[in-house]
Image (cartoon, rainbow, N blue to C red):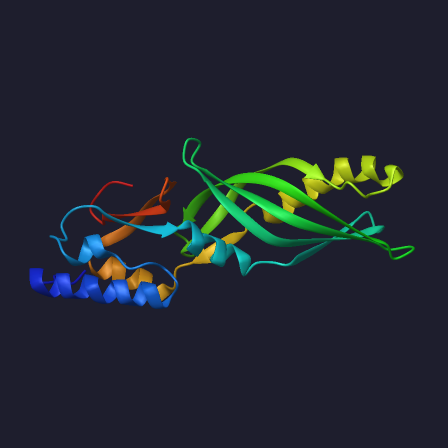
Length: 200
């Protein structure tokens, strides 16, 4: 790994902030103005997270060959006390036989993790809570109540929320850092940058 003089490293960390901002990751003000020998971090605020996740929707899934479920308009909330994210998603169910459509909503929460193998931040341990379809006919509700949460959990678990580009990861590595823990805080999703020499 190349050695960077102190002032060069500070300028490079500032350049890294610009690159990450261009790649939809936030700038790293804490990195740009201090010694670069210790841990650093940056935070994805709630609005930024919602924008990133919103790019993954709408999503369409088939249910038992009888219905098509469309997941729409995710709205996020931070759950720092459990290190998870909560998301309310609008649902649109299209009944395949007679073509009727029913609107509803689903509330779920999940953890996040950084996958160093491909630079992705992913949903993990997706758990569906409340599902509501007030206008759905009674005969469809048992099927939907059993299958829809399982379908959503299987579809969304391990979904990539964002991917840090290889050139960004290379620059982080070249500056003597690696991506560490990803945590949910009151400010947003905090990503730690640790000295590469620190034990994982």
